Length: 112
Length: 115
Image 1 (tube, rainbow over the protein chains, first blue to last red):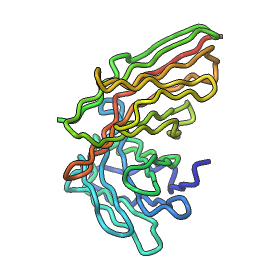
Image 2 (image 1 turned 90 degrees about the vertical axis):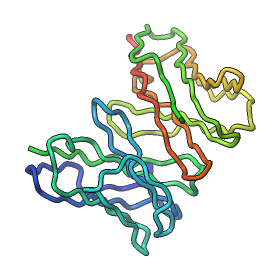
Image 3 (image 1 turned 180 degrees about the vertical axis):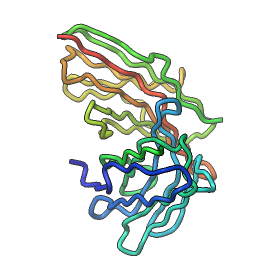
Image 4 (image 1 turned 135 degrees about the vertical axis):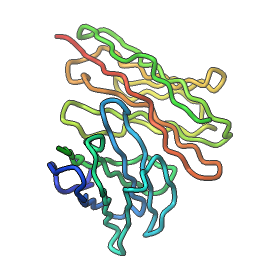
């Protein structure tokens, strides 16, 4: 158990809808990362927050947004969902930006 | 551009064989960090090792060993006397630190260890 929790585990929704994925980092970790893992694209870095502030951005679509709250939990919002957004979404946390990341169990999103 | 290449998509070995997973990276940074992660069938990624660009010492942890060679931009991972429980997808990753941080993962190598 990495200490990182993600909810929900599974999510099935329709095209055009909006969903929110939630992540609680390991105790004491200030950095939170979001990744998308799909079969054809591998593991893609989306965005990183450090102590509430956005620190790095990867291949995140404009339809997606994230935030990190004062209690350090983070949410990833996905809107105007398309079939191609179906994937496993991982949250990870670390002690700092150069350190190893500890991954949550992921949220499997299926868009129908 | 920064890139991580894991050319081996899938490897199958018989239990007790040694196996090496290759990782080649590209970066112009002088300061960077390399990682290996394991993703077992359960799905959760597990951290295995971290290396910074100034530390070329090879590392051994039980049956696992890592060979970091800056001259060839490689960070290879060897499992000695493989076991069925080693069956997983293994990812090599790079943190690029100049300017905006980038977190780059290779496409992974699926290792199947057969009993």
